[in-house]
Length: 183
Image 1 (cartoon, one colour):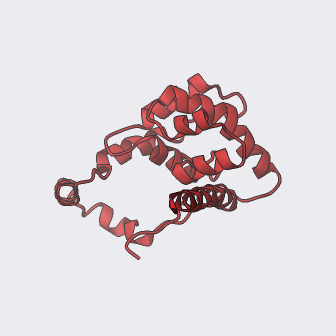
Image 2: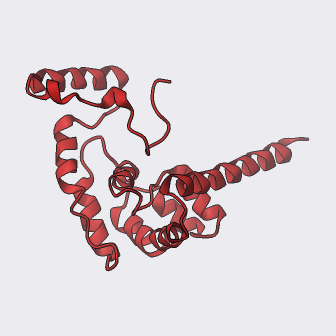
């Protein structure tokens, strides 16, 4: 498989041996990554940007007193070249050991299917506006996540459940569209 489909496991192909760190030519690695981005026509996060995120991601505001504004300010500091809201949120989910929920289109769709968010809120979770995203994430998604995690469900399992609900909703929508298209 060319990439792992789960954010919850480290793909060892990306691990850097401590023995290599002192011997690495970081300017050469940056150049190779730039070439890779040009060839694939997609912007991977440059190592310098990932280093900035690594420094900032552990400085999350207190989960118990978190406001949408505080979270928007925190999240805004994680958005760098090649990293959008949902990728930054998935990084936060993993680094926080599941204290924060991940987010992608399937999870947002699952939250809609489960009645945790409404249609407008699901669109905000898939959007690019940090303030709107943060309001829905902090006031709707985070409380639902925290409640389910308090029941003893693992972050990985809850992520899979919410995404599965989104997949099922998409499949039902597709089946309905196919049925409606028949003469």
